[in-house]
Amino acid sequence: MLELRGVVAGYGRLPIITGIDVSIRRGETVAIIGPNGSGKSTLAKTVVGLTNVFEGTIIYDGHEITHRPPSERVRLGIAYLPQTGNVFPDMTVLENLEMGGYSLSRDELKVKLQEVLEMFPELSGRLKQKAGTLSGGERQMLAMSRLLMTSPSLVIMDEPSAGLAPKMVHRIFEKVDALRKVGLTLLLIEQHARMAISHSERTLVMVGGKVVLSDSSDRVSGLDLATVFFQRA
Amino acid sequence: MIEEALGQLPTSLLASALYAMAAVGLTMNYSVTRLADFAIGEYITFGCYVAALLTLSQLDPVTSMVLAGATGALIALSVDELAYKRLERRGATLLQVFIASVGASFTIRYLFSIYADIEDLLFLTSGFSSQPVVFLGTRPLTNLHVLALITLTVTVVGLTYLILRTKVGKAMRAIASNRDLAMVSGIPVWRIRSITRLLTGFLAGVSGALWAYYTSINPESGWRMLLWVFSSAIIGNFTSFPLTLLGGFVIGSAENLGMWALNRAFGLETAYKPLIPYIAIAAVLLYRNRYRFTRLVEL
Ligand SMILES: Nc1ncnc2c1ncn2[C@@H]1O[C@H](COP(=O)(O)OP(=O)(O)O)[C@@H](O)[C@H]1O
Ligand SMILES: [Mg+2]
Image (cartoon, rainbow over all chains, first blue to last red; front, side, top):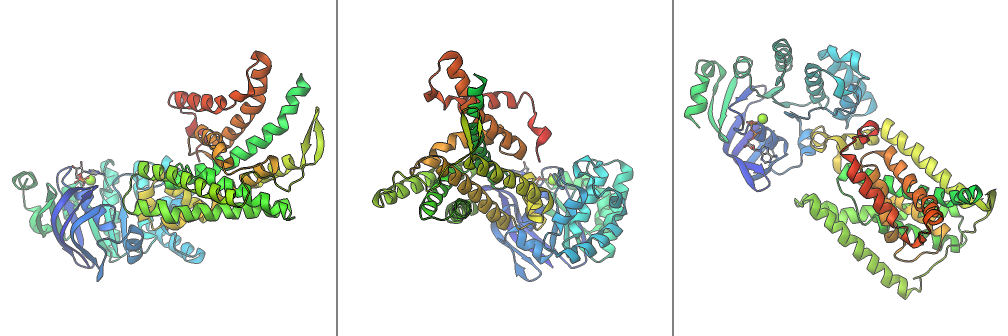
């Protein structure tokens, strides 16, 4: 469903990730782990079109999207949760969701809202609240629910559990499982490497802007991650 | 004395309304595009000329003003499509686009000056006839003042509704707050930008029309208003609508009422008028970082 072939991408004229060959099957959940600065976020941004691609091709659902603008990729069904700044803080929860479903008609929006709020009932009582005043966990919930407004088929999440208390981290992973259950293809970038591995079918390890390991999560869970991160650096 | 001060009020109000409207357009444009568009002076100039020529050919002033706004809107959109957008899509930095807007401003102004010279329009007075409605002291409050205040009120109410209640307005706020997130949320960022450009140009054209009804115009009329409009927008930090409006009134009143007071108190020549916006800009830049008062009212 998603295929990156020999991709070199970065910011301005500076390549950050190199020689990326990744292929994601429909319905698969793939965890991406790796040390800080290894290019995980850059890989995610490259798939949604927020970086410059210098070499290689990106194919999504049979469409070549290597140089297509983000808005077109959204229309093709790619949804992305950024690592930082993933809600509009000065807008209400409801407005945030409306913006997520910008292309929907009024009736479609209503239906979609109801559907999303069923999955994220904790937001129902907070629709009129400014997103900036939500707790960290609620904010991530809002960001995740916004993703669903466009009815995506591929969801890319960049550290949805970062900076949250352990209890909240578990809630986030529950939601991740819920997304898996409805058949979405997931790319999950995580600092909580062990959690990510246990909630995915496959794991990619990135070090120094390269994918150094791609294997079934079962097998990766048996490895000593520190050794993997360092040996391949 | 008090009567004389009161006499300054109508002109202050008119100037304030003019600056406030153009500056609000500039602020809106900046919020969505991150560009402080230097060529806004030219959209104002086109508004001046369209309104002047239409009223001279007997069209009523309100319709002429709306058509002046429409012309400003079309020019603002065209400049974006032909220049700014193309540059940005090729990866130009914001500074490069800003410099391009200075270039666009000069190019449009000189081309228009040549045209105006050929057509013998270098100096023009509109067909608007100013009539007193009531008297404030010795100075009359005219139908022009009334028109300006009504236009400003409609603008403020309309924009407030747009920004707070409509989908397009919310998208503008979203883009202003986080452009990348807006893009990946599926907000049609480029289309919203075009709508913004139309609104900015419209407001500039309308304030140009009011200016043309107030005084005689030339191809540099809008350019000469630029300093005042920019300083109003700077008071609003280019992001806050309420503060930008306030900025228009601070600048408009300061240059008339304030100048009159300085003239009375210290015998300062009125030719020093441009000092007022410079002082305002300096004051804002100095104090903005100290008191983050702008955050309080940012939309
Ligand atoms: N906007 C940017 N401009 C320039 N360099 C960046 C930018 N964002 C990240 N980088 C650089 O790219 C490298 C990889 O960063 P990132 O993809 O965020 O890593 P990770 O998400 O794995 O921590 C880092 O060295 C970082 O400094
Ligand atoms: Mg990251």
